[in-house]
Image (cartoon, rainbow, N blue to C red):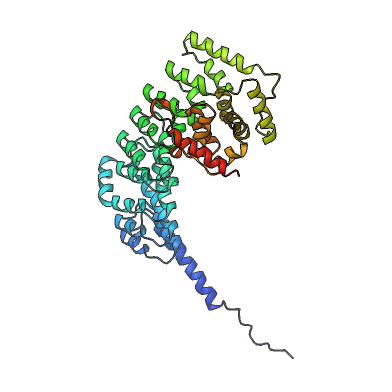
Length: 421
């Protein structure tokens, strides 16, 4: 007897799975349409509102998308779409004919300008990285990016764009849209003297150091001489100054009196020194390199007690002179400099430490005066011991004298001494 089995139904796909597959097929089709340059403009316009970010991203990359569709994409809620659109539009700019550029300005400039002011830093940064060294990018676009308040956007354009004029650079130095704007200007190749003058007139120590290290920057002789004079307070300027392509005799002479021994050696090898000055520098180096057998050389890691022993030994031999203290400051030996200043001034080390801890510019100036030193030492001690910013440092008064009255300096010393008790 034959057994009859009921027919076996084929497994049917779940409706939700079928729907997902259908949607995936439809999305793939829409992506191809959005990416194709042969797609009808009206279809491209419709895809601007597509719910799929992948479709809109394909559209953002398509150079055939109409201008008003690009404008809509510039307002897309997804930052990734706006980034892709920004890269596309920025890349298009230099490859267009004059006629096409005129059309781009009419049809697309508003879109690109909107993206340049986009709240997302990555969108603005994308445009900056594309156009930073283009010789044919719109000048207004470059200026807008250079003035961006976010340094990661502005810095590549400020440093590399050939389209920024002297007037643009002077405005950036004057306005400093971000904390690193002036530094970025200082690093530009082939800076002209007017821009160098503007940077040198700022209180931006890092930017001035970058300017001095920029071998292609034009710096007037008078400006360079003024920076050499200011470098007493900025020892990190010494090396780029010593290595400048050109130094006036006056600048070389001033530098030879303030730089550390290893930089004096570099200075002495310059080909533009006069023979008498070169001979003088070689003699100074020889004197500096002869060790004093009675006193161990200063070390960065010496203890406070060791520093005092060395300071008293120098004082007993009559060798505790201003240059010794300035040399310790140039090497950054704060403990040694503290001990030297205290012994020379006839004050406890704790008084010098207190003036430094209080960041008292007047106190340190008064201690330098009491020690019989000049304002060169007072300025160096304010920077080294109190770590004061350049604009907070008390500098020399009339005729390079002390900026405080004698009564004021005596009061400062008395005040610091009373705190000791």
